[in-house]
Structure formats: C-alpha cells, structure tokens
Length: 354
Image 1 (spheres, rainbow, N blue to C red):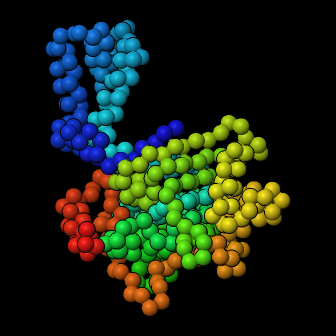
Image 2 (image 1 turned 120 degrees about the vertical axis):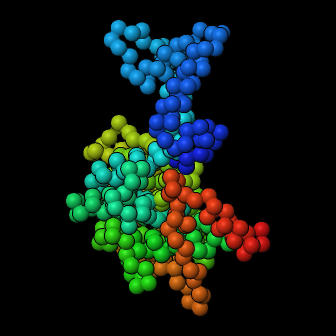
Image 3 (image 1 turned 135 degrees about the vertical axis):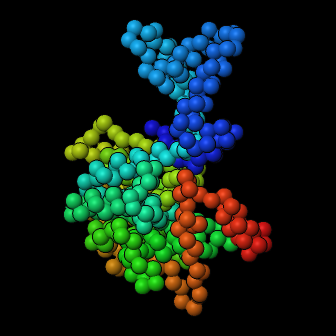
C-alpha cells in the first residue's frame, strides 16, 4: 500500500486560500462546487452522477435513493481527498507507524536518514494530529519486557552546510532518546529504556560513515515500511515523501520468510557481515531478537570497523554548533511558521555563501 506524507498547502496550493484549514470551510466549498456543477450544461453523462456522489458522501442519502456509479464515487472521493490534503496535509505513514508500533511483539528495526522526536511532548495533551511514536514504543516496551528495538542512522544528520544548528539539535535529541546523558539537555519524558534498545551508525569504509537515503522499518518480520519519509516530526508531517507499506500472508511460525530475508540482507550490509548461509553471524540475523544481541556484542567489541557507537555530538578539539529549537529544526506541518523559515534560510545562505 502506498502512503504519502505532506504538509498542508503543498498539495493543490491554489485551493488552500478557499479552504482556510477549516472543516466547515471545506464543507461550504464542496457544497458550492456541487451547486456550480449542477448549474452547468451536462455534456458528460457522468457529471450529474458525480454531483450526486458528492452529495451522498457529504450527507448520506435517504433509503431508496439511486446509488451513484462506482466511477462517480471514485471521482467524488478524490475531490474530497484533494481538498482535505490541501487544507490539512497528509500523514499516512505517521498513522500506519502508530498502529504498527502499538502491536509490536518481538522486535523493531528502524533504519532511517533522520531519527528524532515525532511530537512536542512538552505540550499536553497532544493535538489530535500529532503522535509521539517514541512514547508509543516506550509504552509497548514497558508492557512487553522482551521487546527489542534496533536503530540504524548515519552518524551525521542529513542537513546541508549552513544548517549546523538543525544538525546539532537532532544529534542531541536522538542521543537523549536512546541514552539521555548530556546534563545540558535533560532527557525527554518518553525516553526509551536502554536495556531494550540499541543504536548504531554504519561505517562504509575506514574513515567514512555510510549515508542512508531511505527509511526502512520492519516489525516482527511480518510488517514493513520502505520509502522517503524519516522517523522524526518533520519527516512525517512537514517534508514531502512517499512510502510503501507491505505485509505478507505467507507466514512460517508467525513471520514472513520474504520480509525476514529482506531484513537479513539489509542488516548484513550495515553490519559488514558476509551473506553466507554458513557464516555464524549471518545465521544469527535469522532472528530479530538475536540480531539485537549481535549488534550489542559488536559494539562491545568496538564495532569491528563496521559500526560505531551512538554519537553524543562531541568531537575532540571541535566546538559543536549550538542546537536551535524544536520548532525550527524539527517543525510540525500544521504549525510551521513560514516567516521563521525564510529567516533561517536567509541566514543559512549567508553563512554558506550560496
């Protein structure tokens, strides 16, 4: 199933001034659209059918009313979807992850270009459109002490030159989520229990850390998402992306051999393990929870030149950049300030010389 994440206004921006981010305004807009369509000369046989379909979707018709054709209903549903996406944005992947993480039983493997908080947990209660995925996973781990989480991200966040403050924010935030050590930045309330989590940075070759361009999240070898979103608030609500969510009906002992093999190959590449059916480490990757132990053992051994410990943002003899705020570095699509964005972009351009 294909899922999309996109901020409001991005989809059909010309519609947004008419919709004003308001459900009742969308209602009025649709009713006006229906009225306009009804008054036009009918040159296509489906036109009136579409009007009827819109009416039926907005207000359930009384019993005995003629049901619009499937084609008309599809057109009407697309019109409503387009209006809603323009006014409120799309966050399909966020809702899919919220549901999947709440049902995890054995392990969660997260590989993503950017890993950070998915909601501002200082605001209680959270707005209906926001989801604290870290909190959901944290609660699931408390309910199931045997559940394990593995997080693989590049050491250096995916921000261009001039945006060092954003990168510094993310490094500090993701470190606090898994470790929570720096006294200068207290741990967030939904900090994950470290006994059940492990994070690492893959190394491409000596002296060069791997880049990760695509997000892959696999749960219990029976559910997966692959695509352009990132596991952070901006990546699920602000940045545009498309993702593929899939599962499998061909299960063996409750798990999909196809998804398992996909995960094994991916993790073997990240951990520098030969994809040899007889290699003991590759055999260990057959099971998600044993994979967790393998990562921990590798990190205890220093990473063996293939992976590195979770970075705290400190480099000897280098003064780190000051992190900027959550709303600047990790914005929410519904509350993002375009004026603030313009100021940050202008500052970044002046610093980098663009």
